[in-house]
Figure (spheres, rainbow, N blue to C red):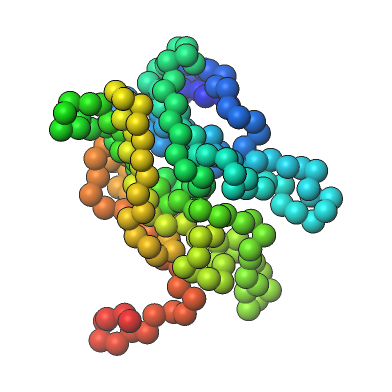
Length: 204
C-alpha cells in the first residue's frame, strides 16, 4: 500500500510503501490528530474469477481482520503497530480519535460499519431496472454493515470490536470539523425493506 502525506499547500511531506497481505480492497481509512488507521482486511482482488462471472473482489471468511496504526508523519514502516481482530470487512469508517485509558494506556477509538459476510454479488434489481450494490434483500443479515466500535491499545497491543447497533446501516457522516477528534454524533443511512409510514410527523 502506498501512503502519502501532503501539507495544506499540497506539497508532498512523506511517502511510505507499507507491506500488507496482498492485493486487497482498502475502501476507506481513518485518521486521528496524530495517527493514521489503515486496514488490511480480506476482501481480496481475484481477477481470474471475472471470466467465471464472479466479482473482481472476493471475501475470504477464513482470515482475520488486520489494522495498522502509525504516526501521520511516520518515516519507517517498522514503527507501525499491527492489530488483529476477528474476520470482518468495513466499507466506511465514521471517525476515530485518541484517548487515555483509566490506567494511562494510550488508546485509539474508531467507529465503522462492519460486515461479517460481505458478498458483492448480492444485488436487488430496482423498479427502473437499475441496481445498487448496497440495497440487498435481507436488512438484518450479516451481509449488511452495522455500526461497530473498535478499540486499539497502543500501549499493550490489545484490540477489540463491539457491535453497537444491530440495524443495517452504512455511509456514516460526521461534522467535518471534528474528523480525527472525539465526536458525539454520526449520521447513518438506514436500510429498510419497506419505507416507514409517517403519521403526524412520526415514522413507524
